[in-house]
Amino acid sequence: MTIGLVLVSHSARLAEGVAELAGQMAPDVPIQPAGGLPDGSLGTDYDLVSAAVERADRGDGVVLLYDLGSAQMTAELVAEADSGARKLFVADAPLVEGAVAAAVAAQGGADLDGVAAAAATAVGQAGGPEQEFAAGAAGARAEPTAEAVAEPSRSAEVVLRNQVGLHARPAALLARSIADLQAEVTVTFRGTEVDARSVLALMGLNAGGGETVTVQARGADADEAVQRILDLAERQFDE
Amino acid sequence: MGCTAERLALALRAAAAVIAVHRDELVELDRAIGDADHGENMHRGFTAVVAKLVGGGFDTPGAVLKVTATTLISTVGGASGPLYGTAFLRASTALGDTSEVDGPGAAAALRGALDGVVARGKAEVGDKTMVDALAPAVEAAKAAAEAGGDVAAVLAVAAEAGERGAESTVPLVARKGRASYLGERSAGHLDPGARSTALLLRALADEAGAS
Image 1: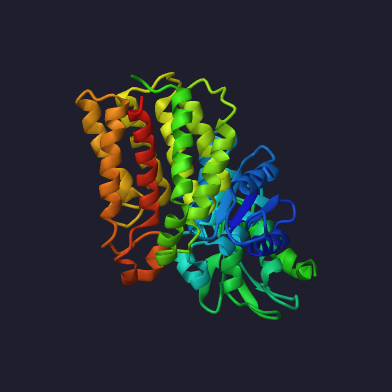
Image 2: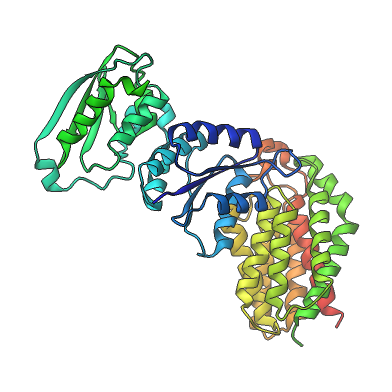
């Protein structure tokens, strides 16, 4: 299962830049920029977006993200004109944050709904991680069941032994390391608790190298989740 | 008398000619409250539509509208491309595979076009957009069709209502599209999208009435 992403922007360079950024965190996800007009000027082009969707689709579906005004219309029109031949979803999300969140979810093997949900939860993350977490953004996760809540939790203090701390790439590795687990996992730093599956929220903690964060997991595989994050930190995030 | 694919293709070629004649006027309207590209964009789009239609070979009016839609989407650009493209696409869907459009069919196609534009652009009547021309045209078309009007009668009242609707945009302050960036300064200008919609409706009505 690999969902593709198409980034619809008025600017070719903007789309390419966002694709580069999101691609660094999700190397196996087909991310196709679709920016600008064929002659290189600003605008959105239907045929360009259609072709990008074709390239991004591996058969599991494609999530389209857009920047402004007519980019949304073009993306929605491509989805409408496709009339069900492919699984397409136009995400109402900020382009950069949405693309990063969607890419990480897709890298973790989420389906179309999961990737779409991850993009949607990116709304407002730029403003601060607590806001995002308060909105109950669990990304592609299902709501925890009653039994899961009742199960014992595990927590650990994790020292960030790498140089840059929870910067973009390490944050993406952390989120991905637990993508396939059921446990609800949070990371707390200086009183701010965020969803461990949200790359942007993790980055928003500004936890630098040498700092210590608290990892808490709750649910069936809570032990496994915490252990994976401890291992990752021990390996200095493979730097 | 109904409207066949052949007749509709002719009417769209007439509409393209009208757009060509009014190209500079649309450019000037758009220069006042937009980015001065509406006339050029529409002219380019409808020139491409004519090139697609000239060979003929379309079985249904719906097929003619569909190729018009996809051509406009690919060639007009900006917001107008997706908006007009959606309008023609939904009109095509409303007609289905009927071989000859009657009065109620024409009214239904216009309704489909309006619903598509509203869904795509999220504009309402009073926002100073093409919806201000299209919405009253749809209402008038519905009434004429219910009164037993044929295609020519339905399109005639739609064109008239569309022209009045377009004129009604002059005092409005834009709430959607690029003109909305101007705020109060957008008042006092005819909306170029409403104007092009009214021009298209008039061209189709004149062609239908000429039969």
